Image (cartoon, rainbow, N blue to C red; front, side, top):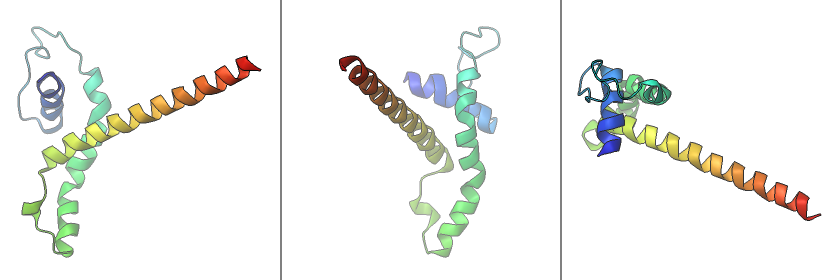
Length: 107
């Protein structure tokens, strides 16, 4: 629930200008900053703009647009995949750095 209404809905609102603005982001309360959301908007914006071209290219190969998710859903998954990739990279880097550090101390 928090992920959807505290992050995805406001990001969608910033991206398209439609949707819900949760009360935490409303100017009269301003409990949350848009700074975190702005980190993820380039990914969603890129897909949002490229979606019509993607549909056209897929139609050339006989793929019906009815069989594809909406641009909103693809944008959501792109943000999730970006966060997962960044998290995996960060953990792998930390693991490698700690392993190297422990090997140096053991010598």
